[in-house]
Amino acid sequence: MTYDQPYPHESELSATSVQLNHTAVYARDRHLSAEFLAVILGLEVGAPFGPFLPVDLGNGVTLDYYEKRDEPIQSQHYAFLVPDAQFDAMIARLEAVGVTYYADPSHAEPGRINRLFGGRGAYFEDPDGHNMEIMTRPYARP
Ligand SMILES: [Fe+2]
Image (cartoon, helix red, strand yellow):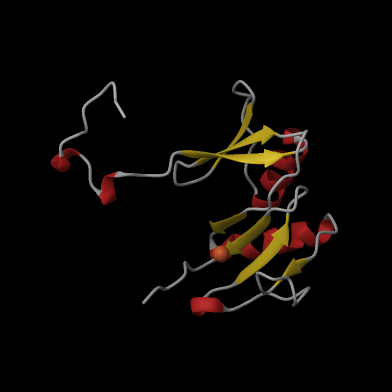
């Protein structure tokens, strides 16, 4: 295996300097799915960038919605840390568009939220079956 550029020196690259910048989110209809997430979370859909339709998040990560029409879309899990003050509005918007939310990732507790880690959280499906999560406190790992 060869690389055009040499490896960066250890001092230039550490775990704390590596950040997720963007990821592709597969969708049957990129406009529909990007708009869905943006509406629920109170975000904006950006201008198309080639085949991608971006939704920028508050920590600099971009979700690039990308259409995949010819094969099934594998459900992925995306979790969003959201301000506590906006959580109720997000739940209200889910109710307004008729999308069921759940307290648990396996969707066994419809219409309920969880209280994990001293915060509030809920799960819902996007139009492509991606399992979206909103939470006001990040997971506390031992
Ligand atoms: Fe999660």
